[in-house]
Length: 243
Image (tube, rainbow, N blue to C red; front, side, top):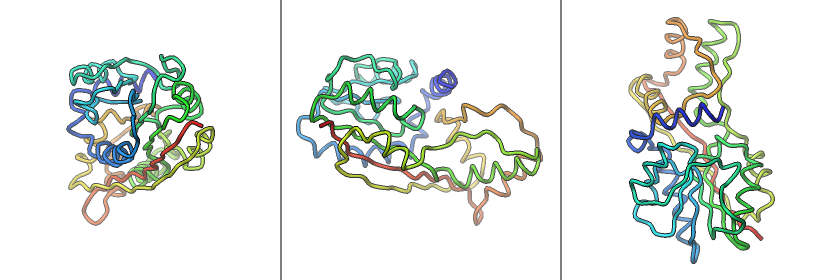
């Protein structure tokens, strides 16, 4: 799965910022929490994407699984390395803050939590935004309903983590605060909605191609809502501290 995720995001790197409307909005909310922390540097941006949120900042290190995303970070002047959030290439207690925006859904949360705990300094903060169960609900439900009708079975779709799973994975940290956001955007056609997801690299890493015209036409009908095609994310924001 990781190889497919890396491939998808590497292909998307050049156009990512153009389509990352949900990611940037969630990131702006998370930056508000960062502004409340005194002396947040050095800071690790975990799952940095192109590094757009921290362009021009000093004391920020970027890490992403995609080498193409890392290249975009470096183009923006950020020190960056390609690496796995479940096995961070940093020494213990290297950072005052670890910041992760819209990336942990692609990782094994418990492994990532242990690694972040290891590289954070005592008293350091872990700031997280992660889309959770209920994200892209209408799109995923419409696709599976159409898939059952045409092929007699559900497709193997990507699943977002449940809130309870997120809280449990990070229970080794002190929970300072949390917030729930719902971010939604509607599109005039299903192709435009799907284009945004595909150009981001947010493709299903599990599903094998099994598509025909009947499936697509039925999916489009089920996906429509009052003449539009909505994409929505349920996002959990956390402020955590290593004690």
